[in-house]
Length: 167
Image 1 (cartoon, helix red, strand yellow):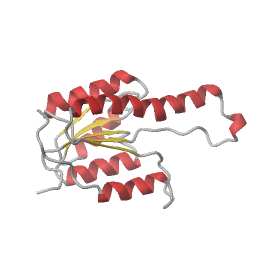
Image 2 (cartoon, rainbow, N blue to C red):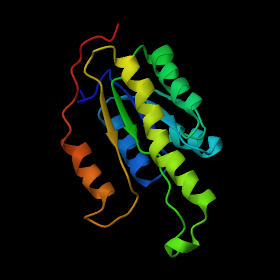
Image 3 (cartoon, helix red, strand yellow):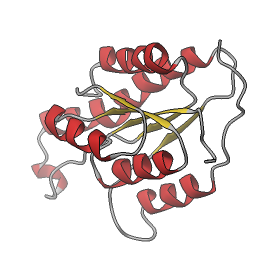
Image 4 (cartoon, rainbow, N blue to C red):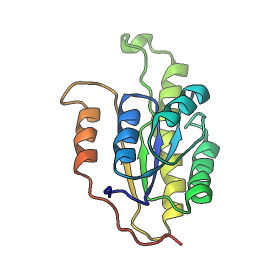
């Protein structure tokens, strides 16, 4: 019996380091997974490696419709959404700030800020007062002091949400 048996967990940026690690950990604890990332083929291949019930939808998290569709997918396939790991994110090129184009900066803001806003906007609506949980992982850095490392520790210590029915 896993800590997340019967729970539905949505993970964006699911094929990357932190996202795939979170998916594997939640699957090992009995969660059903709704996964998203940009590359449809990689997403399907990754989902097939998990020992869990999964649904997946590829797309760009900066598109609000994807966030809405992911929540709908969770509810249609599994009847509920309990936890969201809004992990999808990008960084600008590793160059001096004056060399970052306005277009690139705009893309980072759209994915990292608006993408999380859209995701949480639709996720919170699906919880209808139930005790859903959301987490935001901000980096894929491997430094022990990085936000990603801190997020990993948070995921490990996160208690399961209430098992109250969402319907």
